[in-house]
Length: 347
Ligand SMILES: Nc1nc2c(ncn2[C@@H]2O[C@H](COP(=O)(O)OP(=O)(O)OP(=O)(O)O)[C@@H](O)[C@H]2O)c(=O)[nH]1
Ligand SMILES: [Mg+2]
Image (cartoon, rainbow, N blue to C red; front, side, top):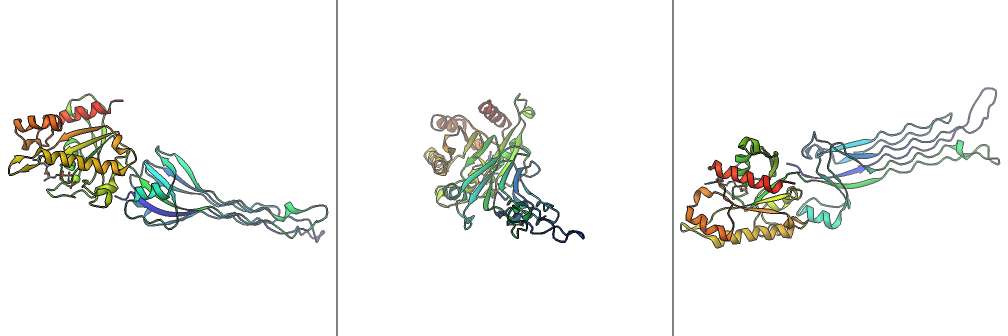
């Protein structure tokens, strides 16, 4: 999924004013009649629900709006340049960045440091002006005066604005799944929704963010559907560039609830609760290093793969980690989790 793109935009220049004089058979040298130049086209960005990622913007890196045309004879104003409208999915943040900004490393962090946030586009058809077109120059007709009936001057059009932008898409999910790689996040998304996502028994199976809709009604729960996001796993040192998950935290930045999956750890077939708690802490650490208030979001701690646990082991875990257990093989546990999530999401 493409969720960050850099592009240059340039509004159209204003057309120049014209220098001309009226020529008539019976009046060889008439008055000045040079028209004004047309205004340059603007560049707009608009939120459009027909898009759910930014991949349509990767083929073209420069967006130039049309310039205004030069003024005509007979005081005719030149044609204005056409605007450009760039559609983006709702949830796109628009950053004004230095021209040499590089979209590598921890982009969200770099944007916060060196970019200027111009807009957060949330709703369909919300529109913002990104670069204003130049004004058309005035034609020589404007410069006539009592002492100068034949002005040879006209105004030049002003240049259109140009900017370098980074568009950053932050998916809108109600709840986001976080946890170490292999914790079972994608499996859970599939079990709860109809999302089609890759699952495998190795870390870093998920390489981008996934979204699924959960319909509590299908589980005989009277609650509204909600959107659940699954992102790549987070590992210790993620904020220093390890693993893949860090960059994807942008997609849970806007969710109202974090669902933190902690998988059981066994050492010589003994449950290792200390390691589980340490794993939990390491993910929390990366969340707080990410910033943007992510660590302030309400969190549901959920122990995954609970089919691997005996009732005694569950009892040992409750005082240490909590009492939410889930297994994709246990429908009752899935239903209970949906109930807990729905309850947390109630306004
Ligand atoms: N026994 C058991 N295995 C599970 C359960 N949920 C997931 N698994 C297994 O755990 C492994 C990892 O599952 P994923 O869903 O890919 O884990 P993930 O957290 O999305 O992993 P990354 O995308 O790499 O971060 C797979 O082999 C799953 O089949 C569960 O409830 N019980
Ligand atoms: Mg996954």
